[in-house]
Image (cartoon, rainbow, N blue to C red):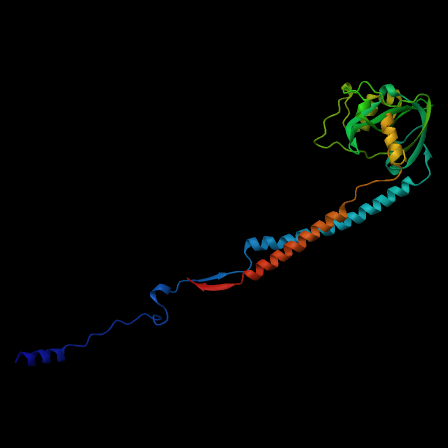
Length: 289
């Protein structure tokens, strides 16, 4: 009897419904649930910065090419000035028109005022330490101009610059020199000149003029660099005898712009190659996580 009742109850019990599975469970396991799409780009901020370097360095190389052309034109112009026949330096030098005659050759006559000579330096010439000798030249009309006689080794000058054993000719002299209006400027590392102690570290023409008496003593602001076009042997002989060695008669301006341009162009090519190699390695990826 009981087995019959158990079978009847089981037949009357409603069937158990199974819980529906979430949509997509057929395609994703619990360990790979869908969240958000992450995209890795080729061009991160660092890659963009690296990509700008070739452009920047190429522009610098092009700028150096233009600077080289400008420097060559300037050297040609200055040599054209220097190659002209020397002029007699007038009694009165008009400072307003001096820039037009920069690097032009002039002839001046007079007598050296060695007692008030100014030693600018120390400087070096071909590995030798010494000074530039700037000596006032008193002309026949009574006016005074400044003449850079050239370089002399320090062995002919005492440490306090008071005893000077270099060549100091007497009497009337005729000087062939190059007029200069744009001399070396003082940089932040150059000490201040101390005229009262006889220490001049850079050629301050206006300061030298005032130290020698200025307009009251008829000192003019003209500055000549005496020319000496001797060969290497003659230069060595002069230096060994304590005779100041003047500047050459042609223009010597440093022109390294071709080297600078080659350096920038090479750096541009190298960084461009690095940029392309980096972009190729960084392929865009779409991943799920």
